[in-house]
Image (cartoon, rainbow, N blue to C red; front, side):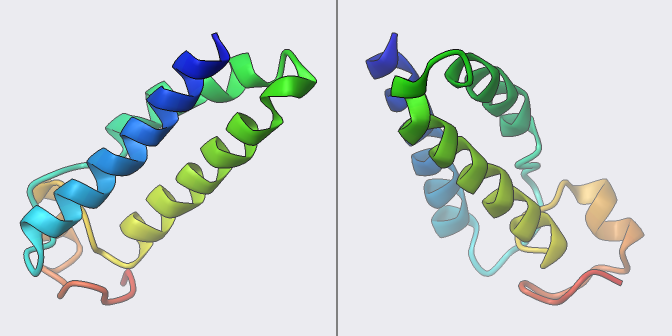
Length: 94
C-alpha cells in the first residue's frame, strides 16, 4: 500500500510538471484542482499510520503547489481565466 500511495503522489507531481511544461507560456486550458480529489484520498489514507509520514508531507506539498498554481494564474480552466480578466502567466490573482 505504501508503494502505491508513493507512486500515485509522484505521478501527480509528474502530471503537474508535464502539463506546465507542455502549456507554457499559455496559462489556461487545464484545471489542476482535479488532482485535489485524489490527493485528499491519499492524504486521508496516509494519516492512518506513522510509516506513511513521507506520503503525508508529499501530499501537503502537492496541495500547496496546486494552490500556488491557481493563485498565480499559472494553470486555470478557460472559464476561470476569462473571469479573472485573462491574466498573464504568473500574474497574481485579481
